[in-house]
Structure formats: structure tokens, C-alpha cells
Amino acid sequence: MILTVTANPALDSTITLDRLDIGESHRVPPAVTRAGGKGINVARVLLQKGVETLAVAPVGEDDFDEFERDLGDIPSLLLPVPGRARRSTAIVEQSGRTTVLNESGRTLPAETWEQVVNAVRSRLGHTGCLVVSGSIPPGAPESLVADLIALGRGAGIPTIADASGDYLLSAAAAGATLLKPNRRELADATGELDPLAGARALQAAGADLVLVSLGEDGMMAVPRHGAVLRARLDVVFAGNPTGAGDAAVAGAASLVDSGILDIRTLLSRATAWGAAAVLEPQAGSIHPDCDELERRLTITEEPA
Image (cartoon, rainbow, N blue to C red; front, side):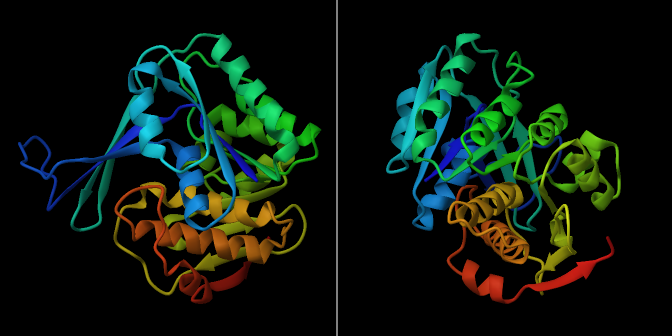
């Protein structure tokens, strides 16, 4: 089973329109809203692909029933907290350009984080891979991501983190099995504009494998030892990229959970599932052609 942790879940709304004109009024179709947050999206994709998963998240009591109802068949452990869930709005234009407005989240009671850690600890005996994914709300412990990664490592469980800023650095220092930043997150956290240099900085801090999302340029896999690999598709898709990183994490986690740690195989699936997410209107889903996309990938060795 893959256990996903979403510290900052959201109600995600997607609005589709022909073109966004800044400063103008728009009449648009009703927004489509679903329970989300990066770890929740990972769990959605895993369930779509028939992979056993459990999503852990603290959810605002004002929206708890809506959140739980929308998750439907997705196995989850939702921890009620005061207030409402944060909102995230994706504005998707016909051209494929997407603008995302993310609320930062609300400060939660200190005991919330103890409850999250205890919830994870209580289920590690049934877990084959632990995924800690997404932003962290204001006021959360600076050590939260590192503490969760350390829990997994202490139980001998592979760990994956999709984080940013100091939380990405702390996940590396805690010895995450796999980190999946995008190019900008990597540069912001390490100060290195070159993705390979940034990945090496994370490894110097303690991380193992680093998968770097490069947008239209594909994805790079940087192992501690061995060849650096780059995967590219033969076409660039227009669509909604907001869930691509989550789908890539789900792809990698599905293999790690099965004990498959081959770098080329991990890179192939993560890249294909990420690309397949762009073809779907909302984050948390991937196009059924993901297996065909994987066969269309070109993988090359990069200078190390």
C-alpha cells in the first residue's frame, strides 16, 4: 500500500474559458470543484490505476463533509481541524495556458501535526511506500516533512517527497529515497540554476534519487551513482499541467511500492504518467493512453 500525506489539502476549482484577459470581466461555465492537494491527487491517480493507497490529510470542519463525499471510493484518513479548507483555482485557456491561484492555507492548532504524525506511524506496518507531497500551511513545524521521512526510514520503508523551499532541503537531509522537484523549485531551494547541479546539492544533503520535472523538456533522473538520464516525448501536449507533477509522483510510487527501483523504469513511468495528466481537464486524473505514451518516450544519457 502507498500512504500519501497531504499537509495542506484544498478544494480545487477548475475554470475553462477561451482566453483570460487580465483586468476584464468574463462570463464562464460553472467551475468544476473537487477535493485536492498534491498528496490527494497522487492517491486519485493511484486508485485510477488500481494501486492500493491511503490518503492522510487534515481537513477543515466547515468543508469536511464535502471533502469526504468528493473523495468517494478513495481510501482516506481525514483529520478534522477548525475552519474551512483552503481553495485553489486553476484557470485553463483554450490555448493550453493555465493560471493557478493557490491560497496559502490556514494556521492549524499545534496538536494537528502530532495527530498527522501519529496517523502515519500507526499505518506504517501496512505501507510499502510513503509519499509526502505538497505545500505546508503557515505555522506548521519546520521539521514536519523531515519527521515524516524519518518515520518511514526508521520503519525501513521507501520514502518520496514532493516539496519546495526549506522543506525540500529538509527532506533531502532526512534521507528521502526519491525527491521530485520541478526546475523552479529546485533552483529556489538550492540556488543552482542548472538542474543537475541542483540535484547534486540535494544528494550532498542526503537524498538518494532526484527526478526533476523540466516541463516541455521532459524529466531528468539523477541517481547518486550511474548515468544521468533524460526522458522526452515526441510531442508537447497542450492542456492543464497542474496535476502533472502529482501524476509523475504516483507513477514512481507505484513502482517503488512493488520493489522496482530501476532508474530507467522509474523515469519512464513518471514521465509518461505526468504527460498523461496534462491531457485531463483536472488534476488527479491521467489519460488512459499513459502506457502508449511510455512506449513513445526517448531516453538519453546526459553528461554527469
